[in-house]
Length: 82
Image 1 (cartoon, helix red, strand yellow):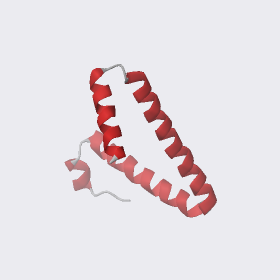
Image 2 (cartoon, helix red, strand yellow; image 1 turned 120 degrees about the horizontal axis):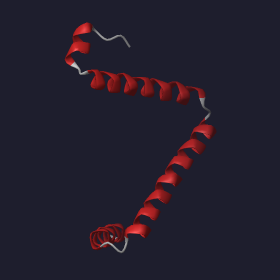
Image 3 (cartoon, rainbow, N blue to C red; image 1 turned 135 degrees about the vertical axis):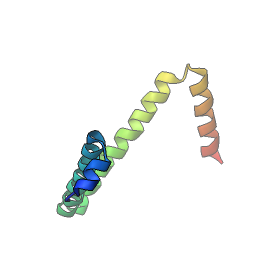
Image 4 (tube, one colour; image 1 turned 180 degrees about the vertical axis):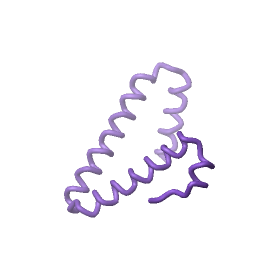
């Protein structure tokens, strides 16, 4: 993607670099998705989702003693049961 000089001037250097990196990342994943089989993509997604669940479990286990976290977890569990 080409950026006009005006656009570069409007954005700070950091913001511009961040925007450029985001565009690159999106294009990278679009190409990767196009090249992957459905089975391979499903495995990648499964690993990501499983890692998120594990991270969440570990967070709640390690913070359950904190009263605010305990209340938040109790509220989440109540919502799930409805």
